[in-house]
Image (cartoon, rainbow, N blue to C red; front, side):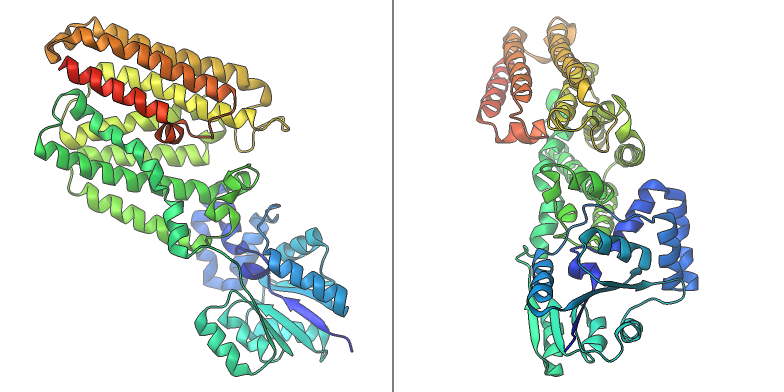
Length: 471
């Protein structure tokens, strides 16, 4: 007897929801249209989806699949000779494109301008397609209960305990397909990247350079500034990951990030962005207004970087390096300790060099590609990026040498001649970083590498000892 297996698409066959994915594509490609898109809902969900499909007709090519669901469908098709149908509330044009790419389904059902195929609407569409032929249904949500009641078998993908309880009441043959994914809270913790917060120690540099680091109030204000910038940085990481799904899925390591891999649902990203922004606003309210200005500047630059400047050659490196220096300005604003011009000059060149390390690594790892995904660089640009990075790194050491000859250093240190020992340490560290980068031994972010690198910690300890003896 002929039997159909009908499979849902979003959060079922796919580890993501196409509606959210395509809405993010609209945000990145047509931000003004994105701002107007909520008004489409006035005419209903079906109209909203149709308009979105008109502006973003193509689906992502590397959208993450649930391998266990794909395996189940192939086994049922081959062993039991079942016909497979892909049925989704997503627009038909998206569903059909996914179906053609997989070459697995014999028929496709999707929403149109008049009907949002969810729950009973989808059930009616299935019956119109197959008549009274028995079918199994592969679903994942409470809305699918209406379809499971009419099916001969229930196949539930990652059902919650509450949904499993409702499925049990149907008293039908049931198959449960579950992913071995980490708990949501662990994925959220990974997504905000707390290991990257080490960069925000830069907010303490003005107080450290100005010898105000033993003042209780200065330390407290610095800690608040650190917390605020950490949440702001996490906001940026979450936003960038949501906007860079396409390029991340093409990347050798970024494809394993929570959003790119589909392990963390995009709706969690929206909630996370709101929470982080609220936290930044709350912390900023306890600090001088100038600090809020630097936070806003940081977020604005990052938005410009995410939407427009990321693909601009050299400009992207400048923006990345400026993000570090902005932390120093924010620390100065929070603690009311002026920033030394020497410190700003050094940090500008030093962090430009580190930003070049990050971009150079990405270029040399795209050996099989003429251009770098989501960037404006070509494979042939790597020698130039290397030259810019090495040159700016060495120039930052020159700034230190000039500072040691200035009158400023003699007013702050009792034995300033001891500070000369900082220059060979910096020369060694910068040279070593670039040699390791050239060997492809630094993975994407040089700051994260330095935190895990024993030799970098030894260099830092020597610098601390040198400054301590110079006081």
